[in-house]
Amino acid sequence: MHDPVTSFVVSVFSAPSAALIMAGAILALAIGLIFHSGHFEFGPLKDDLQRRADLLAELRGSDPQQAFAEAFPTLDKRLGGAAYPTLELGWATYRGQLAETADGRLASSIHAADAFEHADGPARTLEWWANLLVAIGLVITFMGIVAALTEAVDAMQRQGGAGMQTALMGLLAVAATKFWTSIAGVLGSIVLRLVARRRRKAIEAYEAHFFALLDGCVRFAPPEKVMLEQLAVLARIEAALASAPKVQPAAPGLA
Image 1 (cartoon, rainbow, N blue to C red):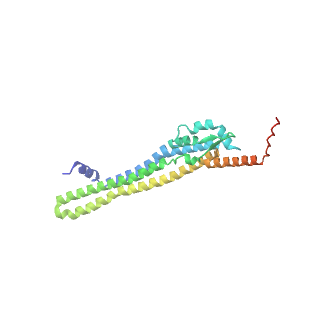
Image 2: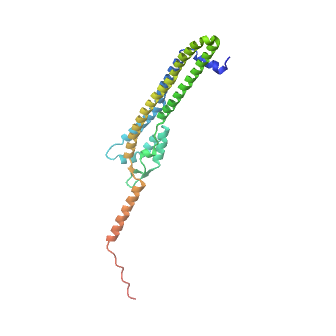
Image 3: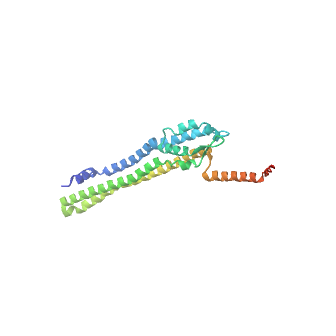
């Protein structure tokens, strides 16, 4: 008699096709994860980035910075509304860096890429599942080997020394099929990582396009640049004062 866990494992893996069915289930899970992530994570993020880029692209004209400043109240509501969490938080950070200039335009002390964190959530989700699929495949493989060893020991005990060779041959034949789950786990992991890499590259391209449009709508004014401009203004003021004619003080009147 075996313990309940061992008996359950043996009953599950006693069928020759059990490991192949589980391997197919692992591959089906990988494909399902790709479609699920694409529909609920990658798709909404891509659409949100494209929507934001389209809003800024509509401002193209002779002076996009002036158009952006004039339409900022409306754009702020549309860019800061309900959106992908990373983009919503990034816009709040970037918006806090905007300041109005003397000519009515907006200036920022940082680039858009520095305010927005990289939105690679969909890719990281697939990579997490890729690691898990390998672990699942290995666990199922070891469970199958345990079942095969248990069946081989039982066969040896029933048949004695005469059936030892037959039991060992059966053990090797059954154990070989159990490795299909590990192979399926590795294949599923590779597919998920390839899809994750491709989607990360796509998101980076969408982000770069959006950030370029956003940087083109504001004036970049880092603290160092502002300080140099102020020093240049002070130098011109000093030069103007030095070149101005000196006014002689009036002579005091005679008492």
